[in-house]
Length: 143
Image 1 (cartoon, rainbow, N blue to C red):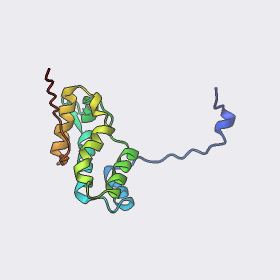
Image 2 (cartoon, rainbow, N blue to C red):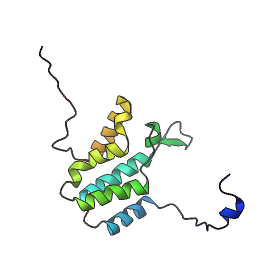
Image 3 (tube, rainbow, N blue to C red):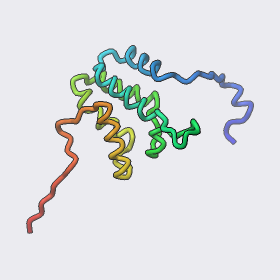
Image 4 (cartoon, one colour):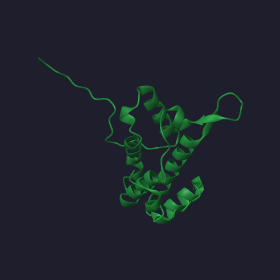
């Protein structure tokens, strides 16, 4: 064992309460004021949609949308990284947000049905499409 009780006593433990969604995005707006408001709002809607629960059988218990898709919701660190990128490049923030979220969620490794669900949620949250983004690649081989 690497961490024994004697070693653990050297570290102080701080228990912090979880941030609400409103507190997350208040933090984002204060730290990254140049991030475009419409892109931040789209991101906030996306995060709240992923964390929302769908009740299965009327028992009051359900799964989050993210867990039904086999995903984990975005962490505060991931949201802050997205906001920092939007803050640094505000002119491209809206157009590149979809691709950044897809890469964070590792969408290329999801089954096609889950990729479509993810894209549907992004469409509902009004994520813009990048002009350079192409979903279909056509290859012609003549020989």
